[in-house]
Amino acid sequence: MNQYPATITTTPIRELSTLEDEITELAAHINAATYRLLTLIREYDERQGWGGGGLKSCAHWLNWKCGINLGAAREKVRVAHALQHLPHISAALRNGRISFSKVRAITRVATALDIGRRTRSIPPAIRRALDRRDGGCRFPGCTTRHSVDAHHVQHWADGGETRLDNLLLLCRHHHRLVHEGGYGLTIESNEPVFTAPNGKPVPQGPDMRFRGNVFALTTANQREKIDIDAATLVPLWHGDKMDDGMAVDGFR
Image 1 (cartoon, rainbow, N blue to C red):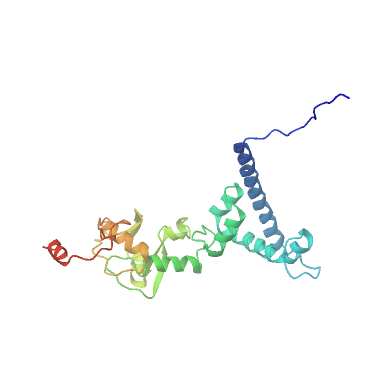
Image 2 (spheres, helix red, strand yellow):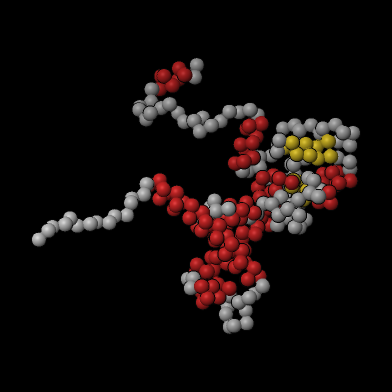
């Protein structure tokens, strides 16, 4: 009886780099599709398409129709609405550059600091950020911390937007000077520059008020050309017993 070798059919093994490319590309496509899904969910919820059938919410409809766990469905609805206030995050998800899990985490802590021309009123999130950044009236020499207004640097009537970098805190007196007293205000290198009615810059002088946050402190040190980095405070000491005599000599 003739013996024939067994024929074994094998699937060619692809290069790992090819597998990696397929996985990452498909993941990006899923991210982009997720953005489209969230957009549809937001519109469906805003139009209350789920109402009228005894359902309690859009999340319950997603649980029923799409088989999504109720907790996960609630998160999708929440993120869908949050994205309309976070244009940069929304664009990243739409283009597949960020995953839904990262977007979900970001929307838990993110606040919209730029709402453009939607409203002149200052939303609470922007006002809190403005208070933390400025700490009070920014007019040179003024130390007023209370009863301060949020002023649009480029006026709303002139097309200015409601965003953090177009807002500045001013006390009522200096706010009136800018609007009615002929004083000018521009932003140069992220710092306010005020001009008097005669066109001359208002001298800045020393900032007499610490604004109580890391950004303000860092900016103040940079303005004074104080070079500080991660190694500034780190000593050369390695934990050995201190030589008092050498330490005293070092101060002479």
